[in-house]
Structures are given as structure tokens and as C-alpha cells.
Length: 217
Image (cartoon, rainbow, N blue to C red; front, side, top):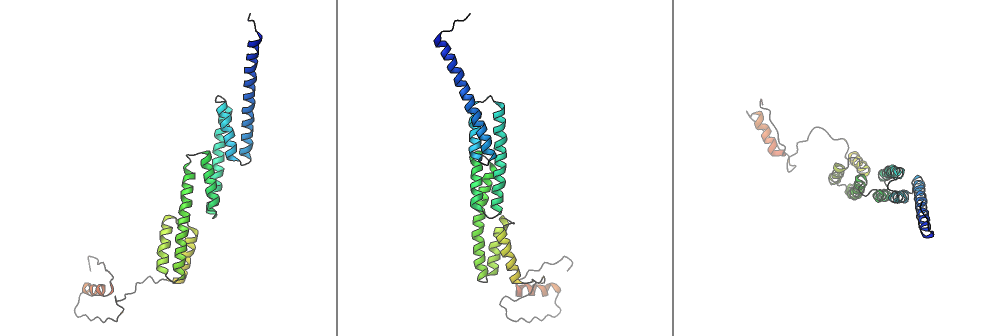
């Protein structure tokens, strides 16, 4: 038989009470975390779930809930950020991507999203420059600027819209090239007993157009 003195009994009771208090606090953190995530307060909720799991590393339910809620939170935030970016709200999108990184610091989709927002801003400046060139009637320069944008982002909406305006302003383009002398002065060519190749060589010198001959010409 074990004789319990008052000191030992008090110590055991203190340990039990402390353990129950810790368990109750962890349960409360866990419940609050689940509630916060369900209400869209992702950072707050994940932080609470992490703390609960940290205090109870052997609690499998806590660990599974933390993993599941983190994944669902990241997916929801990424979807909202992508939608904001494509909808023309880069500031909102950037905040959402940053929130993802608070929950998952190594998330590559969020990092790429932030990089794309930076590209969008740079492309918007280029489109503004192209618009200025278009307004001055410098269509070729405007088109070249837009092509550099579309080469990086073929779906950039404002660049596509301005490209359509440039094409409409130019009108239909003839598929047949027009032979124009280098200095726009009239040219008269006379040939006698000349080969076809010689004729085209003269045309090439006068117009600057290179001709490629088939081996049978």
C-alpha cells in the first residue's frame, strides 16, 4: 500500500488539472480554427489549428484537420486571386496571393501569380505607349510595341483590342506585293534577248526585293 501525504496528493492534482486545462485550451483553439476557416478568415484559422496541433503533436485528428484546411484555404485563395487578376483588379489579386504565402510560404502558384501581376503592369504601360503611337498615326511603331506584349502574353486583352483597331485602320492588305523603286522615281526597263533570270535580277536591284529561283528556271 502507498501512503499519500498531503504534498504528494496536491502535486498529482495540480498535474491533472494542468493537463485538463491544456487539453481544454487546445480543443478551444481547434474549434476556433475550424470556425475561422469556414468563415473565410483563413490566416487566423490556420494559425489556430497550427497552435492546437503544436500543443498536441500526437493528436492525429488535429494534424489531419490542419492539413485539409490549409489545402482548401490555399485553393480558395488562389482561385479568388486568379479571378481578380483576369478581371482587371491587380491590387486585390496581389493581396490574395500574399495571403496564400502567409499560409504556405513556399507556394509556387502564388509566387508566379505575383510575378504575372508585375508583368501585367509592365504590359499595360507598353499598351499605353502603343495607344499614343496609334493616336499619332504611327501604326507600324504601335503594332511593333503590341507584338512584343503579345509575344509574352497572347491573351492580354487591351493589347488584342488595340491590335484590332490598328488592323481596321489599315484596311484590307493585298496579298500581292507591290514592286516599288527605292527612290519612287519612274523606271523604264528594256530587255532584248535577256534571260528570265537576268530580268528578275534587274527588278531585284531596282526594288530591293530578293527573288529565289527554282533550279529549273
